[in-house]
Amino acid sequence: MIKSLQKRISTLFMFLLTIIWLVILLLFVNNSYRNNLSDLQQTVRAALHYTTWDAFVISNGQTSPSELDHISYCLFSIDESNEMDIMFDTFSDVSDSYLLKQGKALISNSKKYVFIRRYVSVNHLRAKKGQYYVLMLSGTPALKATLPTISLCFILAILGIIVFTISSKALSRWMVKPIENTILSEKKFISNASHELKTPLSVISANAELLSSEVGRDNKHLLYIQQETSRMISLVQKMLTLTRLDAPQIQNTHAVFPVDDALLDIIYPMESVAFEKHIALSIDVQEQMKMDGNESQIQNLASILLNNALSYTPEYGSIEIHAHIHNRKFYLFVENTGNPIPEEIRDRLFERFFRADEARADNGHFGLGLSIAHSIVTNHSGKITVERQGDKNVFSVTLPVVYHK
Image (cartoon, rainbow, N blue to C red; front, side, top):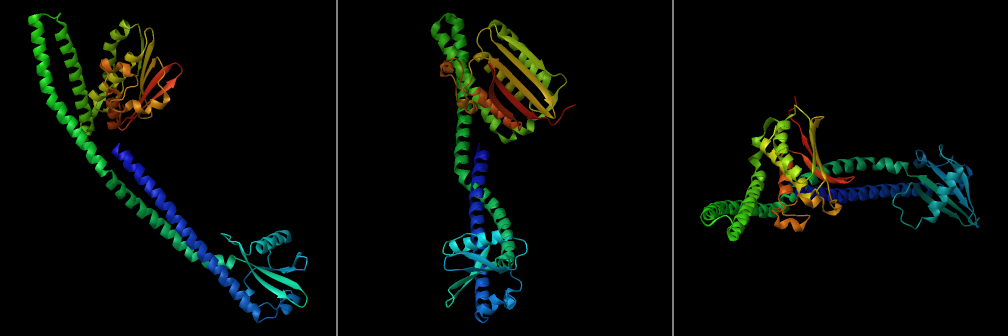
């Protein structure tokens, strides 16, 4: 849980910081491009200041200044009725209709902020003839001048992502540290409390058994003591199991074992229980399966899922167990008929002390079984899910197979 929380926080911080950084770099590149456009505009305007517009217009640009030699441009004339016409241009790959469209857009948006401008204009008014000229310049030279800035920002973006990744991981570790310490303290308390309760419960159970042999087993008060003591011992054992599963050294107990035999050792004794409840039990376990893992944990996993199915399958219902290995993965499916599990609580089924049916709280169900199953699957780097297929609730377990022969 801590690793998942840390990963989510790290990903969120990295995403937000990266977006902010990229926006900053994009604004910087755009500002640099706009400055280059402005410089281009001022350069051409200054050059045309010393070259009469009349000569430039009459010669169709033949007497243009040297600053225009490497710039594509188009000269528009606008009369008193605001009709725009193309006088001449040096664009070779665009149509006149396109130039007119861009020229009109350039005039109409001259006082508006446009994030990316492809063209810039230089204007001139011939007062005597009442004509207005607009020289539209291509922004390609400004874009070329901005390329070094774009390259620099690309490098800064890569470096920023690397720095943000490292810093986000460090920040997420720092943020979840108090939570991790709290959880570790709770686990330590549960472990210590469970160990402390184990001995007195064993003493109570032993003394109750002695008393029952002296006063008779029909004494209902002793019977209540024995039942509740057994429930408490079962709860303590489950809590100790969860504590051991959370221990990092649990991975060292893995070994290669015949998983089919391990499963059948758990399943076959349950056939009598299913028979008494009039439940049809179907078993489909692939033979000669081997995998690397903790055999007792895998058996405990199968026992939890099968007991859960037996508890929630109605009389004359059915349970199906399928187990096989395919593509270096072990699959275990436990399917049972019964009331559908609401979709909104399916993910919570594997939380500690969560019970979908509160009525079963007094029947030895503490909401720890599926949590233990989830911890076992996690320790084997696997995945456990529950879904509804037809009239059955299906618990699916997928584990990686390190060894399969």
